[in-house]
Image (cartoon, rainbow, N blue to C red; front, side, top):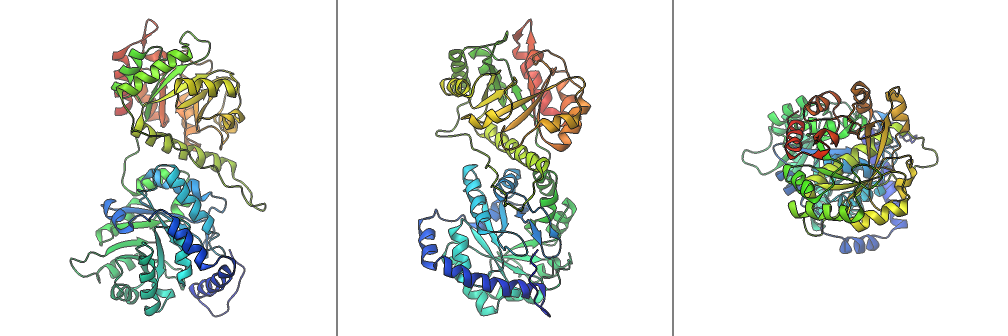
Length: 529
């Protein structure tokens, strides 16, 4: 938090004064004409008001906020791109990015990286990006649009009525419908008189930073009956009951920051706030050896199909793997031009920043599980090639020739080889009988493999490992569960352990051959768990 001191000023006045100085300095570094050129070359912004309308009954605006004047550091080392994409994959319709640097530790680079991550994740046209800052100058709106914002915050308390109207008009000229913030009834009247179409009622007083959750209801009462104004509630939202209470008084959306930033699972909390049930566990059918079985598994609803390209009784050749991929694509065609998206790599931390490796690993794997879940829904089943101690070159060549989507590392390759692969990797951790949850988590590395799979030691043995260890690992980081799963026990496994995906091979075989009836039963029982 900034050490700047402005005696006898409210917190809002201190921040606004500093931002005016910041803008003057920014203009000396980047000319407004340069920003205009970037805006002209950029793709048009998303329609913020339309996105809100499509996100009913309650929209979630999820915020990337490292710190605040009232709370100090919240999550100072969080990567904006990863956090933003995680929010979007969980159902947030707008990503709010704090760009104020002194008190909130944000930046325009955060804004640009969030936009780039949404585009790379295939969500660029579905999810809006909000520049959340203390905007007092048209230059800041140019900055916002040039860095990928679809909308920007205009705070009534920081502006005169004339300034508000002027900035609203300029924002709209850039294609951005602004979010106009009011924190009391008087400011609400100013916003309505100015013609604001989207108004956010801040339950936090920006002069004192105290929270009063009744502010939204008092301001909502001022919206004329039948008005098309969209009312959002900002600040103080932490639970589903908060969301429903605000909906009851007329809010059509909520902006949530601190609670999501502190959550062990931002995606889980986002879904909870939206009233969404936990997503079902995905299902991977592994050890498929022929096109007929692959097509049957695809038609039955398998999300991923595994082929083993390593010494095993279920081994297939690269040519056979290619035939399996072709059969899967014929059974469930994928959209033309579809490509598997990537979760963004974490930005290099500043030299003075520490690192919370466990949190970063969890965020990485949670993000990837969201992307893979979306990929399976759009273009599944994904086909996974299982390798044991092959070189990166060998795996890349086989994956390209067969048309694989993912590569599974099932031997002693280590984690670093994942960085050399042209496709996302699933890294297996073999669960020996004496292995503890702490030892498992200490092996898992973020930023490399896209997913982690826990399997009984040896793999393909038909034996389970201690699921209580899996439960404890799942509380820390998401993983795929394998080892001894069958149609009879997969429901119990999903309920007890809570993996995001379950992997089966021998458990759906009869006399060593994949059994279509067992495949269907397995998929059905996993889905119903």
